[in-house]
Structures are given as C-alpha cells and as structure tokens.
Image (cartoon, rainbow, N blue to C red; front, top):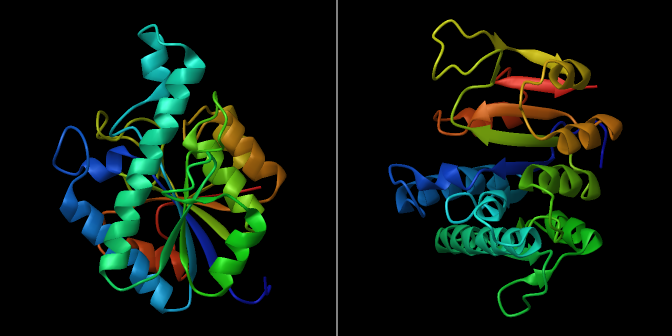
Length: 239
C-alpha cells in the first residue's frame, strides 16, 4: 500500500449486537440498510473496505458452552451465526448497487468463497467490498481476534471497531455519568488498565504488528466518513 494514502484500506469490525438496533434479537433491517449505505459511500470515494461482523445477535459460542454444549461445537455454531450476518449485509450492500463478496473461514462453498488473504487483497484492489465470515475458523477465538488477524493479513491501514459508545472510557459510560473518555491510548496502556476494548489476543496482535485501531460510535451520523478521513473521532490506539 502506498505510504502517502491515509486510510486507503480499512477493516471495519461490527458486533452482531449492533445489527439488532431496536430489537432484542436478530437483525434490524433499518440498521442493516443504514450501515450498508455508509460503507458504500466510502467505497465510492475510493476507500477499500472489508468487514468482520460478530454473531452475538444470533448465537454466542461461549454462552452456549456455559449451558453445557461442547465448546468446539458451540463456537462452530457461533461462526455460523457470523455467516448469517455476513449474508444479510452482503444482500443489503448489493441491493444498493455495490459489489460485495463473502469470504468464509469455514468451507461453505454454496454461500461464500473460501478465505484467501491474497484473493481478498486482489478483490479490494478491484473495488469490491469484502465481508470476512466465520471468524478465524477455529474455536476459542473471538471475532475481535478474527478482525485483528484479517486486518493484518490484508495489510489494512486502519482497523475500526464500531460500538454503541463514542470511544473508550475508564468505566462504563452507560452506568457512570462521570466516566472519562480517552482520545488516544497506547496498546500497553489499554492492556495494563484492562479497559476491555477488545480481547487480549486481539490487542496483542495489533500491538505486535503495529496495526492502528480506532474505536467509535458507528451510529453517530457521519462518524465513519469522518474517522476514515483522519478526523479525531472516538479513541485511537497505537503502539
């Protein structure tokens, strides 16, 4: 990637819960449409965009395992939930006229292509939007870790984590009105303070590979465009 093109290739991590919108389960079609529209807007500006979407709005592997289901089977069910979300987002993007591919870490040839970092970079170069589904394809790894791995593999300029709050706080802003928001942090600070930005594996991967990460509120209108343009939005983590 050219060193002088800021944030030319971006990976956006969305939680499955973010897709629920006003619902307690499943997918809110309005949220799906809005997210697709904002992603396409950036793609039309020449930004290369890939997405990783969690599956917590449908199944959580760790939660299922706690109920007594074998952890490997439970995590595989969670991976399939991310495939469902990926297909829904692909449909929303295609309906708005953009080309979008789903690449899966699990072999599900009838609904998505097998994941290949080399092919993904080629698709991004030709202007396709890519959704990486099924996490890393391995149990015990979160979709946060999958997003970190994929961002590194596709040589992204920036990893974005979309949340329901506008950055990283020293405590839960939903419960503490006096919570302090950080404008920027080092990975070491985030890890040592146990701020819970992403799981530890994901943050260590980003730190070791010098992958910048920004945490922001996807549902603030214009936030995605602003953060990709380099504006000071949310919280930025760097080495």
